[in-house]
Length: 266
Length: 269
Ligand SMILES: Nc1ncnc2c1ncn2[C@@H]1O[C@H](COP(=O)(O)OP(=O)(O)OP(=O)(O)O)[C@@H](O)[C@H]1O
Ligand SMILES: [Mg+2]
Image (cartoon, rainbow over all chains, first blue to last red; front, side, top):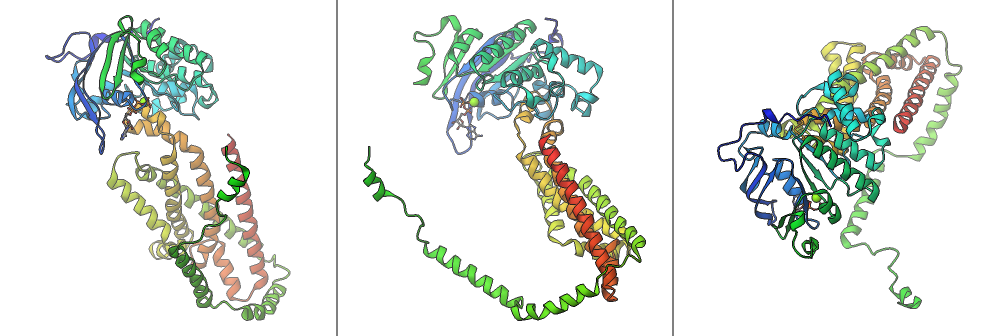
């Protein structure tokens, strides 16, 4: 895989950064929505470069909330987050956006703009790095950007569909295009919130495999949520389990507690 | 399992007995209708007495006169041009304002409230009143009508543009924002394309509406065929008036048919 990641120019680690290759460091993280108790409180974890982490927990356990908090969209009530060695909560919006620009994001569904071409949708992924009208539609994008988008589509095996309208794709194809859109900005970290929840088992397997390949090939870090415990243990190296507002499980896949993960759902 | 007989006894009433409040509301509604009919001078007698006069009008307007067909056609074309240019101007102003007006898009409450207020003002003041104002401002003629139509279109299209953007799926924009894409880029590359079919159908409706109102605007001197109609009526030249009415009918019909054809294509595509 030729997708080179520009790790060399990653921001210099803050003096209190825990370790050099820690991409995400959460300390004492507590989040509560208004008129509601804490979703989770006092959560600590480090995620290192190149790790593949599955985030599991029952409906409403706070998986999506945790991801949004790490991305800076939700301000934690207390605790701290460091993304790539920078304090996410203390930085201005513009700086947060720069941090996000090196993150790829894939959601459960409704990911793509339905009326636009697949290629345009992938090109949108470059807007974080370079804003402006040339990133809105493939027909006005620069040659270099179009080539990068096509390369990203190649990686998910869909280069042939570049000019198809996004709403003519199957669910599995759509998710692979969403992965290409996440890859096109050469992210060092990919967040995927239930990326296969609306796919059939075969397409889901397919998409998880694409995730595995592209993150392994690029040396990127992957954090995904899932309700499929089989996926969690097969495609991740480590599992974080949220339950009752705490991190009930934080273990390598081969060191999971007796009885596995099913206890999270009781 | 319950027996059939049991189910029969538990069947809900077909109609619920109205509450005291609902009863009052019905009574008030009926009173409103009676009061309005009375105040508006509704009278079957007058209507029936008016029929012969109406017949007289129709007989005197037949056959429609083709004498001034050339200058009338010019006026009709001017009407159409007013409608098109006014609608386009209105849409061009409404688009950027509607982005501000759509809730939850730009995050600026003050600008959002201000532009929604402007749309409401433009909509609630009738187009004829706008035409009167613009005739004072820029003088008699089609430009005053064009401006009146533009203002009317801003109020109409702006509101629907904003609503269709509020209804558009926010998923793609949110996914992009998570990758560091600016709000403005996300609006232009995902919200607007998603709302585009609705923008187009709204614009076509606005054009149809403008064609109908551009006819009326001539009555107050804001250009187009309306003035010709008023003059013909005032001079009891019913044969010319009949021609004008038929021309208007054809123009409105053609624009509406073309509009609904184009809308169908947009919705299917
Ligand atoms: N915007 C919000 N305002 C208030 N409460 C919210 C909001 N979003 C989520 N919550 C609440 O926070 C809790 C965690 O929700 P979250 O969506 O993070 O769970 P989840 O683990 O992602 O669940 P799922 O598996 O269903 O996606 C839930 O109880 C939910 O009702
Ligand atoms: Mg969720």
